[in-house]
Length: 375
Ligand code: ATP
Ligand code: MG
Image (cartoon, rainbow, N blue to C red; front, top):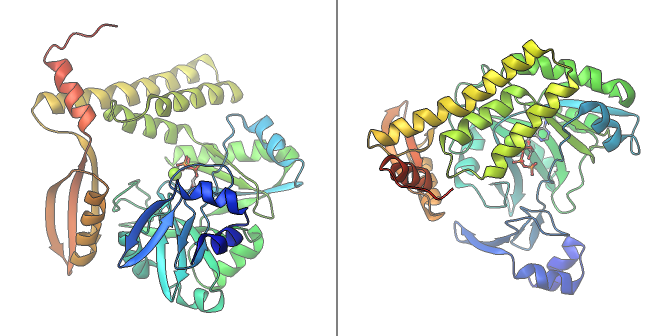
C-alpha cells in the first residue's frame, strides 16, 4: 500500500504523512514488512503500526495527576459527571489485533512482540472475539513474575496472565464506553482488570483515596480513572509503586534517567501533603523512601565490587521455540543477555536471564577504583 492510502486511514494530510514517514521505523516480522511510530510525535499516537495495508493505532498516553482532589475535576468535570475507577496493573502494555487472519501482539512502541504473540494463545482464547469483531484492538496488561519486560508479583498470578483494560477500534483508536467494554469482555470470557466502581466527580477523590490506600497496603500499583465513554483517562499511583520504581531505578542508577527518579520523588511529596500526614507518618514515608534508594544502590555497588555484572533480571517460561525467538528479538534490539539458569519443566523452557546494563556496571567499577570526579 502506498502512502496516500495510509494517510487516509490515519486521517491526516498527505504532507503530514510524508513528514511522518521519515520517522517511521521499518521492521519485519516473520517475513511481513511493517512500519511503526516509535516515539511521541504530534498527530499520530506513538506505537501506531502500518502493516499489510492496515493501521493499528497506538495506545494513548495516560496523563497523571499528583493531587486527586483537584486533578479529578480538572480532568473530567467538562466531559462527564461520573468516572469509572479501575485498577492500574503493573506489567507491560499489549495490543492485540488480527492482521490477515493472524493475531499479533504489539508492544507499546508498535513492535510485534514475538514472545507475547506466541504466549497469548495460552492465556486467552481471542478467536471468538475476532471472529465477531475483526476490527477490534484488544488492549491489556501482561502481568506476573515470568515475563521478559516488567516483572511484578501478583498473588493471583503464578507465571504470566493477561488482563484486558480497553477495547478500541484498530484503525481509528476510538474506545468502547467502559460499561459496554466490560460486558463484551465478560461475554467472551476474557479476564479484565478490576473495576472498583463509578463515582460522582465531586466525591470521587475521597473514594479513590480509600481505594489507593488499600492497594498500597497490598503493594499494588494504583488506579486509572476513566470517563464513561472511555476517552478521557487519568492515572494515580500508590506510594508502594513509587517506591518499588525507585528501588529498581537506584539498583541501576546510571542506566535509568534521572528524570525517572525525580518524578517519583515528587509524587511522594505531593501525596504526603494531600493526605495531610502527621509528622510521624511522614517520617515513616521518608524512612521507606530512603531505604528504597539506598539499600538497592548499596546492593548494586557490592555486586560490582565482587566482580559481577548488573542488569535487569527476568525469568520466562514458554516453549523452547518461543524462548529462542524472544532471545533473538531482544538481541536484535542490541541487548546483551546473560543466561543464568535454564531448565526444562513440563516441556517448557524456564530461563532466567540478565539484560546487562553496561553503564551502571562500568561507572560503578570506575568509582570503586577511585576514579576522581570534578563535582
Ligand atoms: P504511558 O503513560 O504513556 O501509557 P508509561 O510507561 O508511563 O506510559 P504507566 O505509568 O504504566 O505507563 O501508565 C499507563 C499504562 O498503564 C498504560 O499504557 C497501560 O499499559 C497500563 N495500565 C494498567 N492498567 C490499566 C488500566 N486499567 N487502564 C489503562 N491502562 C492501564
Ligand atoms: Mg506500567
